[in-house]
Image (cartoon, rainbow, N blue to C red; front, side, top):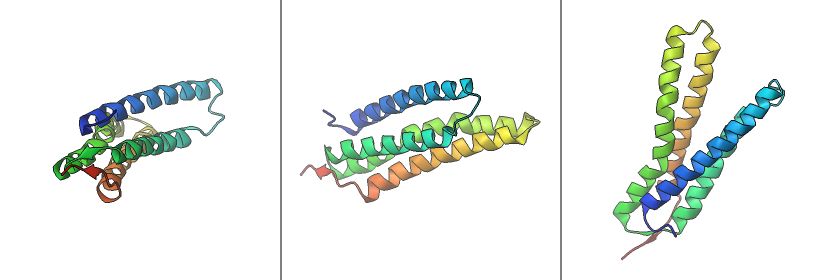
Length: 135
């Protein structure tokens, strides 16, 4: 199934994209209901947690050498760190041009969530995951 850290990265990115589509659909439903449901924090948190659980399950099944373990930990954080770049740019632009500072604060919180998710993926993989090492 997933034998290399790169395969695991591709599977994790696919899961994140699927979660993004599901989140987008639920956000659109929430817009139709005039924001009557407090879904956004729950959605983002559950998406991050499910991605990390998926990563941990697959990483536990990897058979890699010790050098690839560090590479796999970096690849665990890469999608989240890459997703935080556009939100960081949006935060900066909105902080400069927005008349209402709450937009910049909202994008800043999303950026913070993505950065924390990336850091947690890396830390969990380095400290907790014990993949089977090749000899």
